[in-house]
Length: 143
View 1 (cartoon, rainbow, N blue to C red):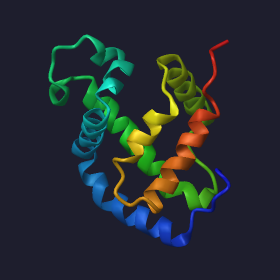
View 2 (view 1 turned 90 degrees about the vertical axis):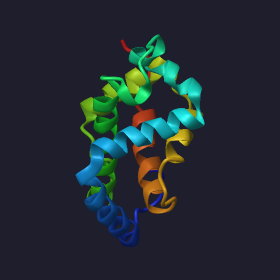
View 3 (view 1 turned 60 degrees about the horizontal axis):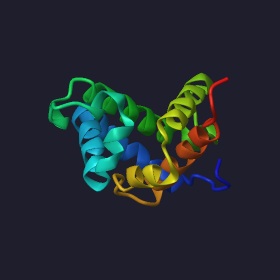
């Protein structure tokens, strides 16, 4: 768990903000990724469905479902963090994510770029760091 404890105050902040954001997760998930690509345009090359696409990012039919999935998983994991004391994403999902991120060439800087999308550095930042640590622990070549 990154050696840090997710506090009750952080849990409350994350739970309250996720309660509000959940209703609009499709739009917010897409905005989250658009912000990442604004900060680090080269990150687009990590996505097979964006590499050679002429479609504007906000209209790409594969980006929005991916963005929603990542955004919801990140937020749901953050909300469960204090209760469970660890990242609650299924181990098989973490292994798959770790493998995909490894194969795609994701490096520490890419995770830092995503963290920039979170406004509350303490609560969301800590939750995000712990999810990243769980994914990175599974980043290894496929057998």
